[in-house]
Image (tube, rainbow, N blue to C red; front, top):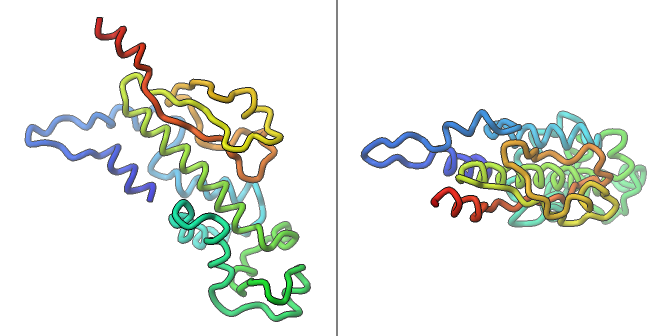
Length: 207
């Protein structure tokens, strides 16, 4: 997942001449720690949304690598399906239909706020964290390129003034943050980053 992607960027294979790692000089210039971003993104999602208890972190860590391939809802559903299910009365108390899925383990991870939306708690937490991780990937990719830059895009900007105002804004990868804007009203911030190269600057530098 992100670790493999990060390793491929920050630790490219050296040739026989042992050229210096071109990423060594950028690791400490980013606004976040790329080596802990998966853990940090999950912590941020757990804390900001408050739908799951902190003890749910190992489950989210185990599930998140599957999200892009299988989809957030499908991955969250598989977690709720896995293991002994709540009784019909227990599901009813949570507002879940009798044929809905909620394992005892998944239910035990719900916070009081999460119990108000038990079928969405894991899904939204995974979604928010994974978008943060994806933005971090784009930042790392851009930071490794001379004249690399980030274009800020909005996957779904509904209700978010920040995303609407900054759509397609170009930002420096070394000041870009992968975390959702503080004022974003969406549970899963849809802000997306696109890594690119400022080819005008490249051409000017070659004159």
